[in-house]
Image (cartoon, rainbow, N blue to C red; front, side):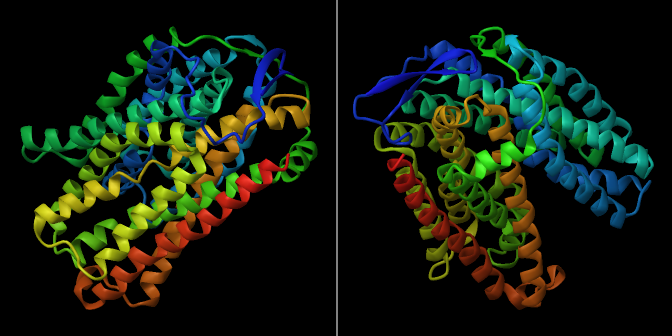
Length: 450
């Protein structure tokens, strides 16, 4: 049963079925070319996500213009800035720019400063004083957030059913994995082709993939159907917070996002130590990390099909169960040699698709939220979801390193506390996914009562 709801000046079809449960045989209203074009628009920000943050801090530290301690402070402050600016950007996208094509305009306005700031960062960023570098980073990540929030909320405006959201964000996730594989491959290829290449040379090779993604994204943006955004004046933060807190499925989804990001952040922050101290493959850690993204690229279309067929919360629980089982199994029989370790990393990567589920579940919740609030606030809600992702990863890094200190782990002599590290690597994310599964069950039950 479907009802037509007037949301933000357009008619939005909101299904009265549980938003995250696909129905057998349900078909999508989206054309394949629209799905492909939308997925391709994610390229620029995908490239500048987690992998870029792996290369950027050591590159800045190596320049010597600021101390290592200030490099840590720089990235801590930019994370805090993200926490402040993301909801503001979401509100701006929802309320400032009106009319047809607003999402497209925001993305185009963000891509120019993002490109110029990236060029400045990879060419002179290692020689700038702290104040100039901080200002540059603030503008860089603000442009990044503006593009990503506008892109994600555009997707929510395109979908009309749970099948639509699973397909659209599933293909976005798949394209993201392909882009990440290319991004990881670029520095490795540069290192092979140019022996002795500097860290700056490798990060420029990484940034060159961004230059490939930008024209692809600009071409794709032209082929994504435009959707109207009807803005409202004012901020109304008390109303925004009250409306969010009063919608339990939304709050539970934000908790799911935090816990999934915490689990993923735990794995990534400990992976290099695990490869060196437990697997004794320190020199091959980059290869193993690369293999995990290949596993994600191979599995993403499969998870998309399963989410459309069996529903998103059950499949997200299955994802957590899959990775947790793999991690706990290593406590009894750990991978031996490079071949088994690569196989383990590939299998582990097949579960790194959590954003596929959370983004599409939020797209399904947005019509209900708009019905309750009397207006569409999709960009604000996607900004909150992104914020929970960042907080989850940041919390995971803080907790993981604190636990390493407690168990007496020394990176210079990892073998001495290898068992403790192994337990932490396996059990910390597993515990997070167990709690996440409980929230997903509650989320389904609460929505069923609406």
